[in-house]
Image 1 (cartoon, rainbow, N blue to C red):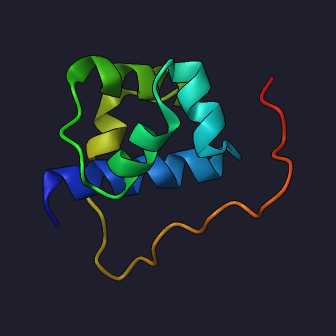
Image 2 (image 1 turned 135 degrees about the vertical axis):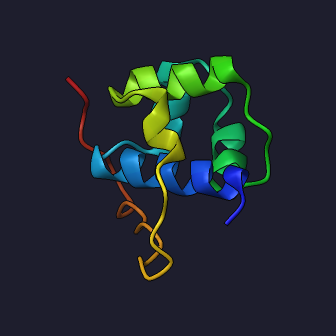
Length: 88
């Protein structure tokens, strides 16, 4: 898996684990929501500043976004539609 796809996979996994929508992550990271989607799909070259913004919102180190992925792992699930839980 290439680095962009690894970052996207981990971003989605961490975001969903925390119950954040793409919209909420984008809002808190001050990034466009459609950009978040493109990053999660591995279609964007992300800057270090953007990685730092994502990591800050997700309360992880930037290195977590580069974590190796087991090829046997299923793609991170989507959040169910409707209202998402609020982040405190």
